[in-house]
Image (cartoon, rainbow, N blue to C red; front, side):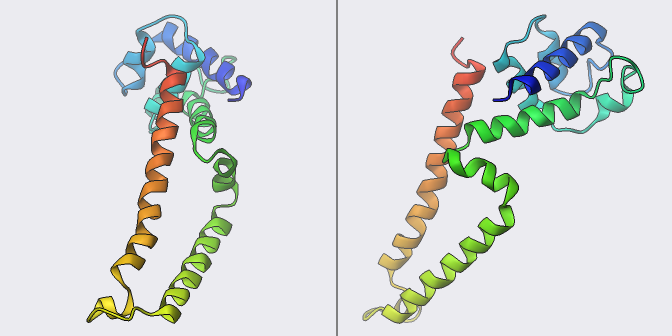
Length: 169
C-alpha cells in the first residue's frame, strides 16, 4: 500500500477526530471517534467503511480554501482503491482491472466465444434437447472454474484484508 495515501488519510482523520462535527453522519465516524491514534490497518478499515456519500465533506468547515484542506471522502476513496489493488487476487491483474477493464472484458468475450465454438464443433453424442448441444460435463468444465476461481479470489483477498486491519486483536 502507498504510505503517502495512508499518511494523508491519517492526517485528515486526526483533524476530524478533534472536531467531531460529523459524528452522526455515517459508520466511519463512530469508528473514527473510538480511538485517538490510527494504525495503517485502522485507516484501511475506515476507508472500507466509507461509502463516499460526501455528506461530511459538504458539512465540513475545514475544506478548501481552509488551510487544513480536508476532503476525507476523497482521501479514504484513494486508500480504499489502493487497498483493493493490494488485497486482490491474483495480484498482477489487480491494477490491470482498474486501468484496462475494457480490454479484459473484450478478452473474456472472445475467450468465451472460442470456447463455445469449440464445444459446438465437438458436439455431444448423447442426450436429448439442450444436452444434445451442450453436455453436462461440458457445463461443469465451464462453470466450475467460473465459480471456484472468484471464490478463491474472495477468500485470499479477505484473508489479506483481515491480516492488515488486525481482526484477531
